[in-house]
Length: 335
Ligand code: ADP
Ligand code: NA
Image (cartoon, rainbow, N blue to C red; front, side, top):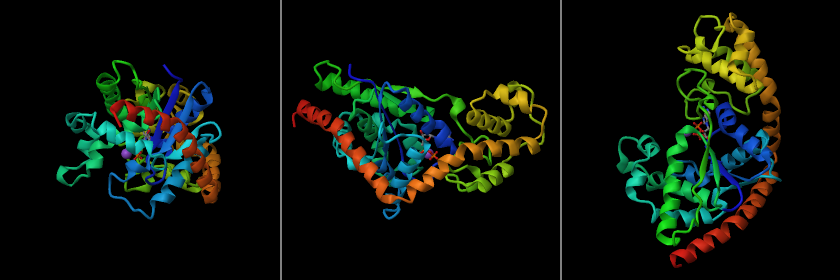
């Protein structure tokens, strides 16, 4: 087996929010800082065109995603940061994998069932083969580990199925592609909407008040937390008391994640107090935590040439890894 290699990516659609940070980016940085693996963090702009998109807005969205990665702590001197469309191995390998994966596998993916809407006649074929492109993203680098949320587990299983099928059909039984392992984020990393504690905090929510964006300023963060939906009860003394209280549980969870405390520790401090006391404390913590990230984000985004330079260098480094793997894959299948 080869070296430990980590691959992950996010779409360049919209602004990144606290859920993206606590559920993904924070973990990317931790994996980078563990220092025992090469980390490849991609802005997956080819995935972004599977749904209707604005070509004029795409380059700026790619830069914004890259800036958010860096602002969150991904170090472009250590990790590889680049745009998917800049490295042709992704598209080339995706085609080969389209011919390895079975139609039934793709049609089983729940994300296609959800995102494709009711009338599948109108969905792009790209949306159907999205997880195949994802497998190409991962296997172009023979990545051994992929940090993903629970919702992406099924796609990673498809990636393993494709690798296994390729190895069986063409690899003479040899493990040419690895069976990539998920690094699953626990449910604790799932941040819910401020408007409704049972929906995921998401960029697709029409209400901006439902989420805290990485670039929100201090006043905006404080205002959104103040407006966050809660029940009228004071905070419970124990974690069990959060059970049927989704909004309270979410806010306590955010406080815990931002301070590195457990929910129990947060409740030891705030149990018995009302949200009138807890919300300002949470706002302070969120502002303090996010201020350096949003400041760095704004600094980076103002220097377009610098981000383009980082993305170009990242694409070069990515290509150095992917090109020989693609070349060998093509030889194996007879190109
Ligand atoms: P969104 O739901 O805002 O469209 P994506 O689905 O593009 O975000 O997810 C990008 C990354 O951020 C994924 O790794 C996903 O697991 C993570 N993520 C998104 N929303 C949340 C959330 N509310 N809580 C935790 N992680 C999240
Ligand atoms: Na989403």
